[in-house]
Length: 188
Image (cartoon, rainbow, N blue to C red):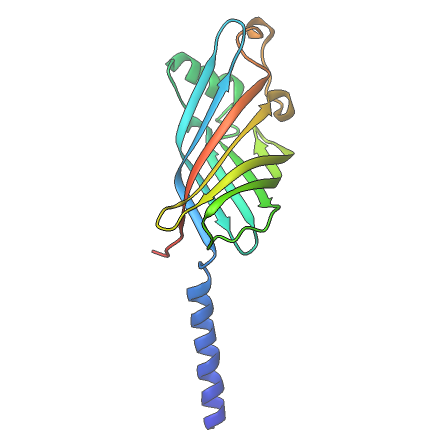
């Protein structure tokens, strides 16, 4: 009976330890910045969102980021309306998702600036595209880990159509830059 009690207590202790450790390798950001810029002969278009969400599991090296398309803010409200209704069709495709893994082995306990490569998919406008994105990860004690990257998104790859009448106003490729301050996740 004593042995059974000891085994039972060990199983409970391991389960509690596993639950406490469940989030030990998780870093998250709920106010990530995503900015895009489109240069064209007639008009430059740019917008920023400061509410992108990202999660990094340092053990599995999995990275996930999500953004609600309607969170992009434009200087011109008409551009914002056209972006949501005509191009991104946010009623049908409200969210874009980045689902990737970090290729390199990064020690999140050591300070430094690391070049990183992310491999996986970008799901935007209902179309998943295999991507490889280069970025930087900055780790400094006492500060959030900072993840930054700049990459291009070809509209055609995500089946985003540009009407012929406005072809000169919108570039076929958007320049995207991201900035995430990743904090060690604390269970609420």
